[in-house]
Image (cartoon, rainbow over all chains, first blue to last red; front, side, top):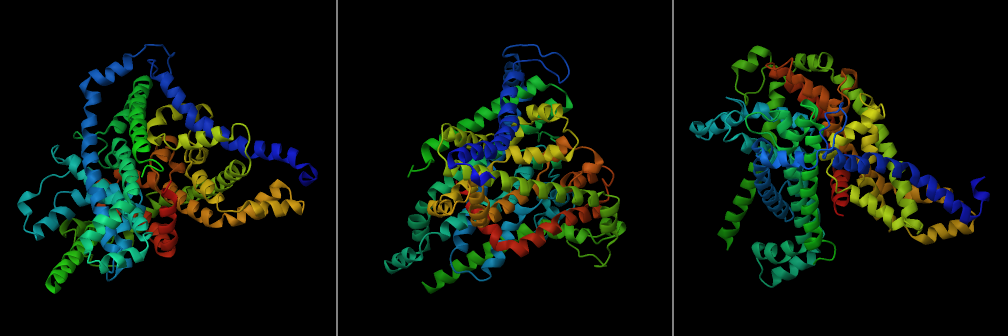
Length: 291
Length: 276
């Protein structure tokens, strides 16, 4: 029946019918929340009350009351961990792109943690960091028994433990992306370089690094936004206790535990702005055709 | 030169082994603990293997008392609907936007791309009110509509892949009198198969491992998925780490099987899915 219509009519029908549901979903669940969030952020809404306009009051609270802004400091741990994560990923991707025994085994093992369920990882590391748990035992073996501490109880190290868990979880992803990018460099280039007497370090420095520069910067930006919005690992493991609350944990608690939707919206808007600025910087400097 | 090489490869293998250890040890500890009895767990070290490798008591308790069965059931239902839905929606959008240029088509592409920039966790405060007012709170549809409406990566992947499907196929089908719908259904969709595999993998990982969507939107016990069912272990089994360990292993095993079976597709899927 449909095929009896002229292509002009068909075109109209197919454009409308194929786009209407996806666009409705996009508008309702991606854009409407953002719009509402802006609106809520200027009100004192608690989820039930009348929404009363209070101007920039919520934003002031976030920036003035140290309890709200201090959590950004926690992001710094995740931010620095990001660089370690990238470094490890790049290192392993580079050595595994050359000849190595049991390549597939190492590749699989290093990557596998990324596939795991976040709650499973959180619990796994609760066990790992427990007093006399996995980490303490390994350190005892290495003769470092004196340096053990309450990994998740000591406020000085808790964020390092959690950021470390996050590195364990996400390193494999960057690793596999880097490995893919490196393997798309044609093999002849290395051969030619070897004839010219280039060693491994030269090959890395002058062939690999320039070819995957864009991928590295893209991953770095993704990881930085990820660090700012760190949530799952600390929420599952500590619930934000002992000074491990991240900005997103604080936001979620403000909204769902304390019912301050207006204030939480202001926090979310601030985070959204930061992430958009970071992404915009990336687009500007490393975007398509930027190299 | 020779010595330098050997020194280099010692360092190389040492670092690889160290990396592999770091990746495996946390998992191994949980694996060991899951076979230990309560008394054995408290008296032996975490890296001591269990006495009885066939002690499945903890697994039984985790599976039955721990509600993991419901978790698996709900996860499979949500996973299936989301993957089928994403594939249909994503391919339809990609087909229309790639093949027809019309007023506003650029704008629509832009809108979909813009949506990928919004970090999901941040907007939950407002999304929650919408889901709630639609009456979807505490139904599996909350998760389904959010996975379909906010995770736009599939559209990206399909749009990119559409470029490699030649227009001339459409044109010759049109000479035979095929309708646009037939072209989509009989030509485009089958040719999108490699992209569909990528979408299934990327989406599958995201949905299986997602925590905050089911946690915020489906707190009801009957609606627990793997993540939330496991998360609940923290309370009642607080000190029974051998049972929690069995629960962790139950959540990991399907991932391990999928990984071993689909390794190549997973590597390719992630590599092609992430390069924008």
